[in-house]
Image (cartoon, rainbow, N blue to C red; front, side):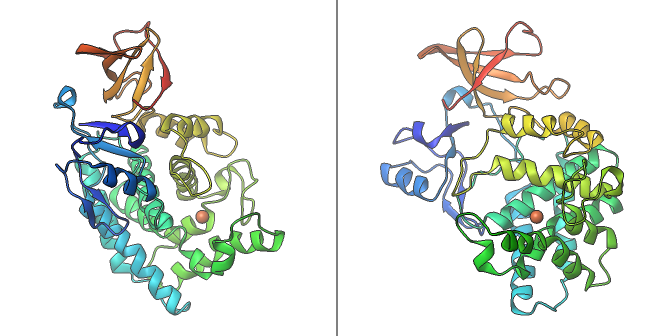
Length: 355
Ligand SMILES: [Fe+2]
């Protein structure tokens, strides 16, 4: 299979993976022929990348870090907690639901820990916050694993990250969904979602206080310019420092109605550039080791003019994956050629592009 920008998907192409809506329901099944109408509808829903069958990429597997079933479970956990809190702001969060969702994510990650090439979701515009919380949790747990956390640390971290934005249920919807710029007072109110989240989690005393601190501290910055308390460096709990990186990386990599998504390599560069400013350098180091700069499937141009898609990662050299070349400039090649950039050191990726 190959990952293709929807604008370049030809009518009659075969879908290589099912497309799901925000609640996990299948919109289009794997193997279906994509008609013009399907493509127009998917574009309207905000889907911009599709997995397409391609004979030249028959042997290429693109694995998600967690299964669709696990994603759906985590998604449902956030939905149910949110619905309960929206009905009654003083209700306690159901710890079992959150615990269960994080255990499942951890199980999937332990099983596929070396497959970190696909942390970004293929999704439309819908239900951003819920998906964002799931993706942020996956990345935070990957970072936690990378710096050697044991299972109980990972559970505490994961449960906090899954609930990190739960305080938004206390912020008036008209402020949260306001289009256009916010007044100073409105922005102050949005910032309070960190404190509300902490309080929501603390209402159930079975939750670890450290999980509650993830909600409280995920907008603090290493340099001290964050909120709500402007903590600096190691004054911020390590869980908060991990959540900050995961939160920003996923937010930048996703498309929002008001801006396009950054390419994964651009979001990656942002995290690196903010090392020591916004983010803890130690966690950024783990991030560099664990997150693919050019996720498998990415279309790239090489410095010799050849173009193709990333088919495999080199874990020791994250900037130099294996690329399957299918074009020379704009001319399709008769046969594809694989370039392992860890061996062809004079070749560089010059551009990330949709092909
Ligand atoms: Fe937040």
